[in-house]
Amino acid sequence: MKIEFTGRNFTVSPAIKKHTLEHFSKLDPILNGTTKAHVILSIEKHHRHVAEVIVHWKDHELTSNADTTDMYVSVTQAVNKLHRQAQKLKGKIIDRKHHAVATKLVAPSPQAETAPIANAPRIIRSRRYSVKPMTPEEAMLHVASDSEQFLVFRDAETERIGVMYKRKDGNFGLIEP
Image (cartoon, helix red, strand yellow):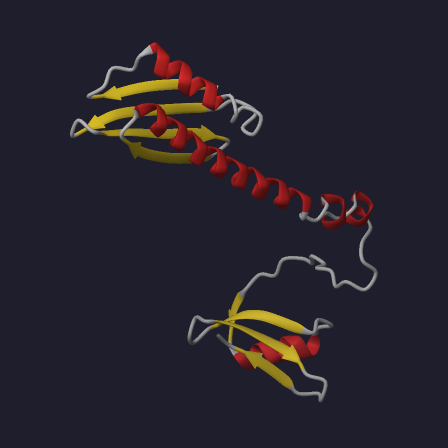
């Protein structure tokens, strides 16, 4: 764990650093891995000793602060608050992992991806159609004389695309946008 010290209106002594490091040693088992901490120690109005601790761990930022009339007590309280926060956060992470659904149950097997579903509809690409300008009557005659069930055409009068198709009742349908 990398710890930076900053003193505001206060000179950080080796004794206070040692005291802080002893308390941070309790956090090492909980926050295993690379962790950066910033300890800010300050004195306000000659009697308030404030200790603020900021820890960056695995995309999380834990902060705590305490102020008393003694700097050592302030550091102890701030690190104890941080210890409780770290335990709570680690518990949440562990619970999330334990209650998560296994990926082998959620993800489809590779065999299922390659095997097609028997009754699933498929898209079958057919040839391209040239959209010719003609009247709806000409399109009806073309569909009637051809084996195709429909014809896509451009209306010669309105320049809009239309679809002429054979209906089951023997009539012709026209779809226009």
